[in-house]
Length: 227
Image (cartoon, rainbow, N blue to C red; front, side, top):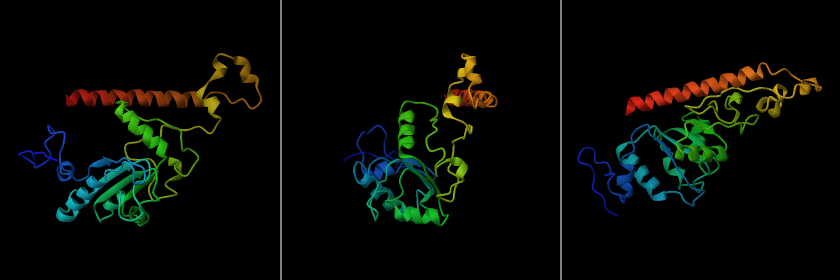
């Protein structure tokens, strides 16, 4: 494979479509958040992982990296994400499966890294939303389980609300009652046994929509300022 480094930083020249593994990982900076793909050993960029590990062991950089992935990636020993178990190399991991990365498990349980275990499907959906240039991934999947952000990280040391995410709110009621305010169009439903008035559910949903609208406006302003 060929590719010339840029004159300024030695990073891989983005005009070249094919570069070496070492050149590819040379653009990664301290504190970068890296998304990885693959399932166990299938589809994982092993050569890039080896190159990144080699660079860190030789230079001490990049450090304090973040990783986000859906399915488990590795062999439970030395391959896959197990290349990134060295002290100070990783600062945060958001993963859908931890069974194949015993070294990262150990660092999480020793409170040495910020560690989050979220549903694989939601992380995959987030990747799809990012590719579609959607501003957010909103989901109720995981509520009431150990990944529920209200559980304050019962599996790991850290709260399960990942950095940059926001718990918009929740209501202790049936899902249909929250999602479909049928009583607005069918007042006779208000006479059903166990009926609960829409407030504060309506106020909750209004507040969520207002928050999302303001967040989208903030993103638009930030995008325009960056242009």
